[in-house]
Amino acid sequence: MKPITRMLTMMTIFSGTILTMISSHWLSIWIGLEINMLAMIPILTNKAKPRSMEAATKYFLTQATASMLLMLTIIINAINSGQWNVINTFNQLTSFMFIIAFTMKLGMAPFHFWVPEVTQGINLMTGMLLLTWQKLAPIFILIQIYSSTNLHILLLISLLSIMIGGWGGLNQTQMRKIMAYSSIAHMGWMMSILMFCPSMTTLNLLIYLMLTITMFTLLNLNTNTTMLTMSNLWNKSPMVTLIILISLLSLGGLPPLMGFLPKWAIVYELTKNNNIILATTMIVMALLNLYFYMRLIYSTSLTLFPTSNNYKMKWQYQPTKQAMLMAPLVTLSTLSLPLSTTFSILN
Image (tube, rainbow, N blue to C red; front, side, top):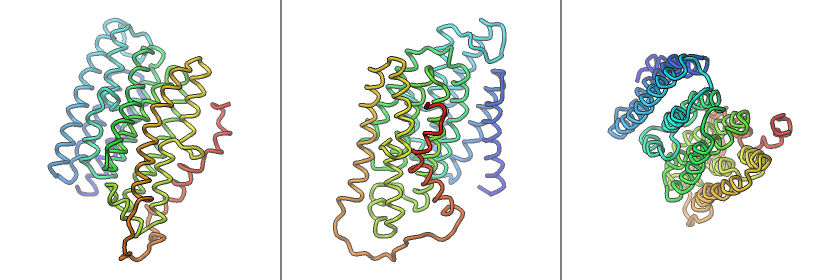
């Protein structure tokens, strides 16, 4: 893809998301989501390989089905309410259909099957775009209509997503699939607190974006896509490998790293609302995610056979723009937990 074409496509993706976020009319929201979805397909098929074509096809079919269901829900809601504005007056049918449509768009369980396959079929930076920017518009709409959504269905989908995100990542050796299942689990955590504290969902989303962007940027710096290349990276660049492993622990929510903050805040809020059983279940399920992160770290760093070092040590990278972003990204994603004391939402 030519640079000018790629730039125009990216601008279209951003425009579609922004249109969705600033609209108060359901038709404008639907159009924004469609612009975003259609502009994403050329990015997915950038290299025109069979795997990329397959990923783009799966993405299109899933998103088109979700868009069709969303439009049907909007029409039914307009017939019942008599208006097209974003309002919080849904009946049980339209509320259920809205949740299913946005669950498909976010890639949450039980409609999560396309996320690992699509992420595996594209390059790392496109995967980062898919798992970060493409989540903004659906989550923003759910935050707007949260008071009319069905609590029990939303909590069931959240628990399923956390469970599937943990179980699905246990037997993976591909880093992109591991990040995809991690995204599914994080979406479950965000939706679990939506009905109780929408502002905490926003905080969780911001931290998730920061952690995921950091992780994908680090992987792209060395083009690491498997556990094998991760283990071989120790000889080439041990410092960057160490940073990647610490970022993985932060993504898993291990204290005292930054990824622990959203899980701690969500458990605290659920406990405050007398949802102790739900909070306990989510904590137990989160151990699955932490387990496969720890397994990845153990297998790539602590079980290496003695090997001859044929590489020249690269303790630092050339001052490219991508490498220069590493210091603030890594600092924010791993060592920013003390800043949580300044968040009024947690007080």
